[in-house]
Length: 440
Image (cartoon, rainbow, N blue to C red):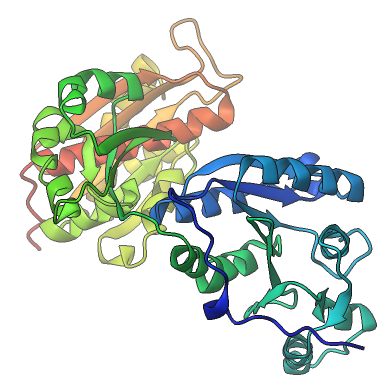
């Protein structure tokens, strides 16, 4: 059987593009169209391509049908100079991508000996028998350039055809990411002249996208022509991303960072980080910087606030513990909530969460405690309390602050928004308050 002789990446032909190429992402697999698998590959590729100054123009999902894959390839080459394909490279009969690509580019499948040795080594390492279908993973179209898959059995394949680059990668996310990092992104950077691009990210929480836009409208209008602002809302937060393109002047990143003090003047209380990070990680940094410990008392969120705080590596340095007091008996027994308070104001009240937070601070022996109680729904509403009503409390040695919200978005979202609101309140108070550690 003939073997593939891949062209080294350094010898790849240079395509003359005056501007960065248009990129299209194509995902292949019925499981994507049926909603059985969520497409995270496209998000990763879009983010990584953006970092090197390439823009994705379109994302397409295609079924496991040869004719539909061919039609999608024909359409993609009309729109883009680079087409990145994931999926359909497994060893089973429904994985058609490799066979379709061989026919599409007028080639035949041949054995790629380095890939075969790699696959054999993987099966040897795991002490598993190697079947013929596993051996066939090393078959590739003869006219492709093989991209070594260091963490899987299906290699990537690079085709240059009539001015368009097609790259096929496995659909398994960690394999695709490794191929993108090891091969695809470096080759695209080397092959095309891509102007330098910089990103600066500011993380905010506690103010919605439209309100943020209103408060920084004049600042945004005054941005230089080569620097653009994007609003990227996520669950309970908005990421502000500045993207700067090369304008021929030095220190683009430094000039972008110099814009941030004026931004802080307008929305400083809502900024929790000036880098890609999570709200809980930013809270951890504040607690460490101030030498404080924290504990939680939760009802409707069932421990979600504690889980998010402890999801950060090293959180044991500041998180001491949490109490999930779902039943009123536990609120009384473990947190010291008075029966009179529950009788007069109810479990979902600012009075109750005040006592929950103060009780948690003393029972857990922490500098700061937060408490939350609410009606997640769909049942539990009363004549005076709607579904989605959430009460929050923050307590330290000098003060206890309470708030009440109505966040009716369905049970699952109600609890998630409640936890996000609690964390936002905790961060804001930690940033503003002069909290002192307990004197032991």
